[in-house]
Image (cartoon, helix red, strand yellow):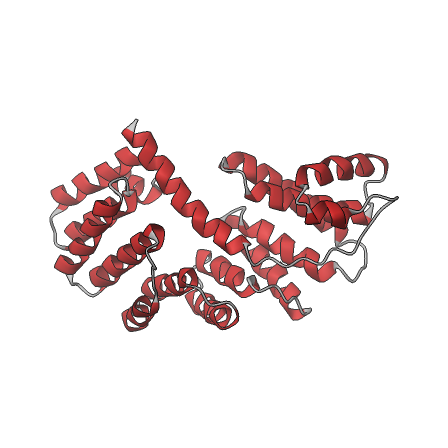
Length: 292
């Protein structure tokens, strides 16, 4: 039971960062169709109703532009709230198909279609991040004014291990829409790029304001930075503080193992990775360490 609770808590932490990113979405919705107002349904967040109506229209006319756009949007935002990864991806795939079809016809809404399409590709994972970059960049070039577009470009570039582009877009996003979550994301990218001075600068700037999720994230990053600098005792102290806050943090056990590995204490390292794996069998970094 404890193990399930800890895994559920880890999922919740990830989703909090996911939904914070959705708060700044901007999509322009001017359409209505045969007396039915898509915009009205959208404003009421009746995504399932839009999907039902839109699919009915598309059965009769598979290339109806209004139906393709609104149903595609609805699949994306309805899918955003689904916890199950496989089910969410199914919604994202439908969003992609409909929005790609919508782009086959001309219209002033294409910029917004590209924006949502790029985000849908991003949530389909690493192998689609190049397409996320393609469509988000094109939407930006055409004047997309959504506050989170630079952030999503940064996230896509980060998954592609293109740190320079990721940092550039995160910094632009920070100018447009500053937040502690974004500051921590930027610190994380600098750690990934090996620039510990910049990482330290942004970690110092990031506040947590009593938010346990942000505090845990900041401690993990501080530990990673100390590990990168060879300050092993400080790194262990940071990861220990994370476990005081959240005993179910597989990441804290994993990075504690990395510290011991760096110190040449492989038995201790494997013991920590085993704890991470036992807490979360889907923790890929721990699996790679244990079973490579």
